[in-house]
Length: 141
Ligand SMILES: [Zn+2]
Ligand SMILES: [Zn+2]
Image 1 (cartoon, protein in one colour):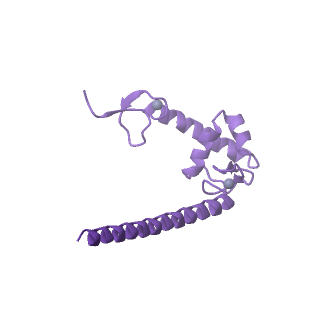
Image 2 (tube, helix red, strand yellow):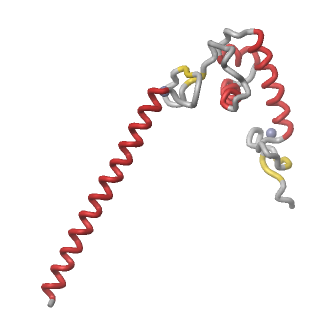
Image 3 (cartoon, protein in one colour):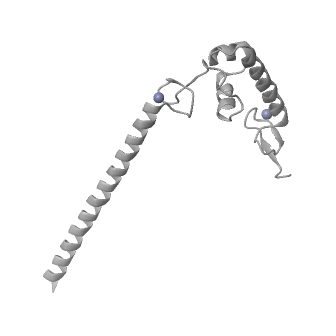
């Protein structure tokens, strides 16, 4: 048995380990999908993501992956957007829209503040219990 094998993350088949975590067959298939997206996009610049997916048979998810990988450029495709991962608003950059980003940031700050408050409360409690222990010790003297 060799450790130099893996399960392709795309089709699940056992194959020789590659750098991209997908098997050569899937890689080839993705390449064909990528080419057809690129080709179609070149001829139809006003196309939307859904239309591109319908026309090429490539899943929306995969096209988004191409976009995120920077392989498909949205510069020449003004109508190409993909949904924000949180609220679904059409966006053209990053994984989530600016308003969700803001909200996540606020949530994050809130969580940090909560954490700080919890720490302070804990410290106070510990302080109190030390005092009680001290008092008990004094009483036992
Ligand atoms: Zn595969
Ligand atoms: Zn959003």
